Amino acid sequence: MACNLALLNPRNRENIASVLRSGQNLGLSTLMIIGGVIRDKYKGNIHKFAHQMDTQDGMSQVTVLYFESLSDFLKHLPGRTTLTVVETVAEAQSLPGFCHPQNATYLFGPEIAGISEKELQQIRQHFLDLNQAIPEAYQGSKCKTAHLKYIQIQTPASLNLGVCAAIVLYDRQAKKETPGAVS
Image: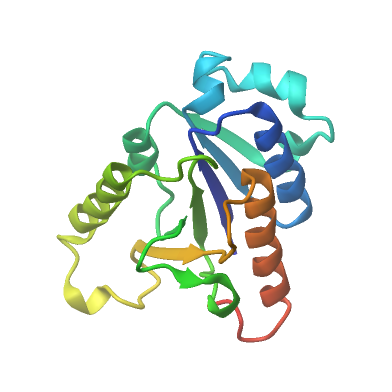
């Protein structure tokens, strides 16, 4: 079961370090960082970030990749993955009832603004284009195609990015230990 996390425009390195630390303890395979502080402060050099913030050597257990833009990330999305956007949108399922995909990539937006409507539309369009040439019989619940899902953590106010990622990873790990809880 592959578990990947992507952070869209994270605003500070402490949040990334927190996600990396939680991830190495909760089964994360790959952490993908899109723009944000890595672009702005480190000019895209993920190695400078690692030198300063990887206090528990998480990068020896979790692969960390950097992408300049959302479109670059979408072009390099792992095959057969289910991109699971963690955002408060109408189509989002509540986390407690969510059945985690076996091969998942969870996408988190910036904690203050979230993922913009323009970015959400870009993601939707990417999946429409991606699945356009796939026969309908192979879409839907088939594991050999890429899928798009939405989940949300229902709280009265926005959560810190690191906390939100840890909650999703913990939920996935806990459900994995319950037979039939991860599809």
